[in-house]
Amino acid sequence: MDRFVAMQAFVRVVETGSFTKAAETLHLSKTSVTQLVQQLEARLRVRLLNRTTRKVNVTADGVAYYERVVRLLADLDDAETSLSSASSSPRGRLRVDVPSPFARLILIPALPAFHARFPEIQLDLGVSDRKIDLIDENVDCVVRGGELTDLSLMARHIGDLQLGVYAAPRYLERAGTPVSPSELENTHHRVVGFLWARTGKVFPYAMHRADERLLVQGRYTLSVDDGNAYLAAGLAGMGVFWLPDYMAEEPLARGELVQLFDDWQLDPMPMYIAFPPNRHVSAKLRVFIDWVVELMANRAR
Image (cartoon, rainbow, N blue to C red; front, side, top):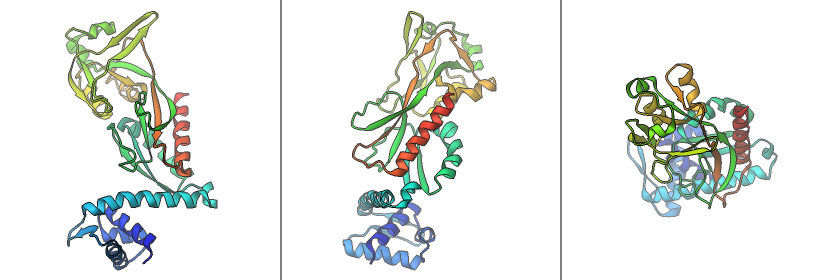
């Protein structure tokens, strides 16, 4: 048994949920893939998969083994890439997690250009605003907004997002248009709260004008922990809310949002790519980070 091929077969069965699909992606017969997994189980003396006529389920031992094997295969791929002529054309699987609005409006629309440049990189994109354990979840890197609080991670600053304050016309018709951020505190006005994944809390926003500086929290009837849901709540008229300018561009153009407090400014939101300090920065991760930095720089122009 070729243990390397057997591990590849097992990983592909887990990820596709099917021996047939795994065989197709590996260009092997279904019988060969089945035999490889059986030989692997015999060598390990544990059952990795439970098979029925309809589906394949991973056992508890299989889950633990899968997590270790995925890392091992990735490290082997990185080692081969870094020591061969393939280093000039990075290849392999890259697991990335990014916020949902960033994925929808910035990253995914630009991915055709990335894959035209690096066609051998397979990108597994997680889209969420939740806190990710990069090591336990075997994620290569995350893109996050705001100051990083996990000092154990390596991080690269990739740009800053300009912010504004907005409300839907339907909200302003109902509640009136505030002329100062201070009107959002202790009045009938409501904001849409954003629950930051790192803390699970809604934080105030710092706003300034000349020598004046305010911390605006406001009261909310709804708070959410996802950027796309946050935008939807604001568009639905649930309250005043703070948005990166790139998220507000299209709704503003359609007349679905009104910008407030033009004479007040907010501190930009820093954006970072973070990755585990003990993880080798492979060629594929390095070119992806450089590309995201380039992408952010082009948007800032």
